[in-house]
Length: 204
Ligand SMILES: [Cu+2]
Image (cartoon, rainbow, N blue to C red; front, side):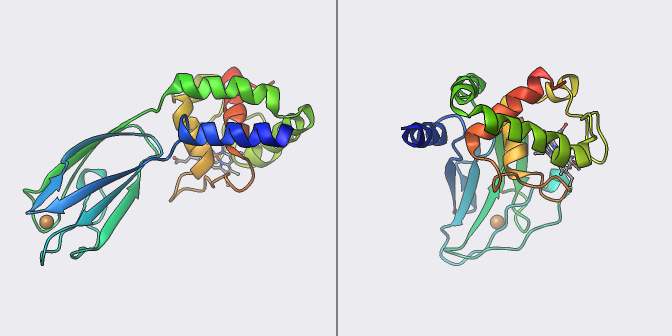
């Protein structure tokens, strides 16, 4: 019975709070279509080159990134957005081809609802295990008392500057290019939501 509940919760979460939706943008006639798009944290965009012959690139120049490789007709480029904000981009070889991605924190209320449910579904033993892991594994980088070390402080005053979704996304996927690893292999989604809630409330 418990497993069925977990499974249902997982499905409902996957389709709401923590959905990692894929969005499509087509590149045709030297235009990004749509050129402006609003997505949620954790979502992925796929740009597909629909031209007959022309290559393009998708370059987030303002993020200080190097220009990525060009891609040719029927090829695509993908990017996942794990932070909220506005991200303008352009095509490398064609500076007049521009677009912007607005990344919104996903529905925080939904995540909170799931957290409340998670609290009743994750067993007390598992909760203890997760808290143990938090002190030891997360603590090895974020400090034994989570005040910060190699990684930043995870105390409520620091962590509550981020939305629930942002924290969940960071723990789930890590921060590529930094030592912060993805925790997806170790926790399921409701465990990450629960863990996030503990951090937000503060752990003694
Ligand atoms: Cu182009």
